[in-house]
Length: 326
Length: 228
Image 1 (cartoon, chains in turn blue, red):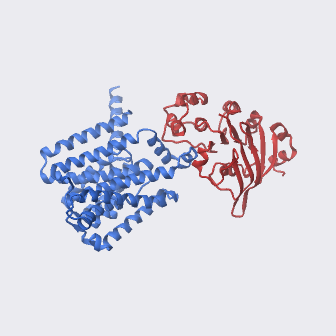
Image 2: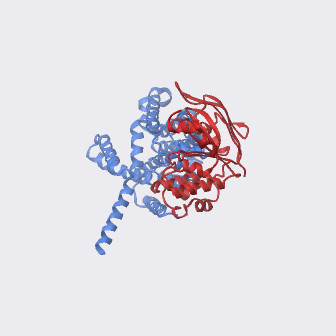
Image 3: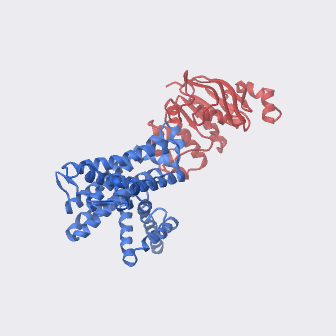
């Protein structure tokens, strides 16, 4: 295990310990709020899997989160209301819908050779189209108002409160650890190689579009799972869950935490949400302006995320201290 | 492992009105080391790009061990046993030397690093290697895959005379185990290989034979002096 991996493992265990203890001290609303943030963190992990490991920025990930959310809502409200299995069917439908969209879009875009800024622009358009469908197809999606009355997650018995919170913690950290373990070896090296030089990777025998598509679809499935679980907690779905602002925010969460580390996306989400709460207490309308300015500041001053910036400062401080001592 | 035979039949490539390669029919015998020489713009790199699937031919066929490979994707051609080294060293900068070799193939990395003089840099990131070491690393990435055909585009560019000789010795040691096709401008290197040589000029194959005969050929001399 490298020093960097040890550092991230320590951060992961520290965050996990804090989250495990929180319900013992937090209020009911605090636990619910943190649960929702953790589901957004899972969403950020899904983007970090694709952007962080392939270097290709997707501006369309809200589509997959929204597909999961709308899939769960439509199944549990319209298609199988009241059925004992509706939550499971909703999960399968929501996650499956996100996966099918990722597969269909990813196939044409990735195998069509669309990369770099062009990929970002195409996926940005995907979010706009998805949002228009969510607003326009009102007989199914509820239009601007969305759908209200999504039942709590039911797996034999209704999962709410602290049980739901711990389920979300388990799902989030289970996925982070599974991805970390799965990407440590040859698979992770191949993705880094593709990010460095896709043409060279192809001349070594790697079907790079297939690798990229597999990661994109897995990323879409995880985003869909986050969205499907999210609406069982909030009880409603609305077009802002499939909107451009959410696609922008998730990029910010990953960028703040440091692209490519997975757990950094979790930390970044929590930091930005904390900031959002602070800014919103001053002025609710200031948040979009603030996030734009913050995003620019991140790009210019901390392109590798806050943890990397902190590590640089720490190294510099240690150097100054040791220099002073000598 | 033995090398594979590469044959082209009437191979051509046009870019709009520009004829880059025209009617090239040539055979690189299994297990032999061969050189392709010619002035800038002769079509050497285009020929290599067609063989490894980077660009599709406009005309003709490419047969590897008798099977057509033209039109196949790059990764399919690579899996058929064809490895390629690019003109500008192409290595994975964010990976270490050992990781580059791990991505390249499942061969004996330690032996390949020892053979190419990279053992001391095994944990060094490829993007901080000197140019010559990057050349060696890319050659090593080709070797570790134990290819049946190794295509090398100017493998000695930027290398010292001693390193150039070392590359020649390495390639000659592959005789019988791997077919090697080298493109190079460096006549000292081509002479050191003393291999069968194919001369290209203005997209066409104009001469082929032993290097000793080729370098005495008045037409080849004229081509290199710009008189043809």
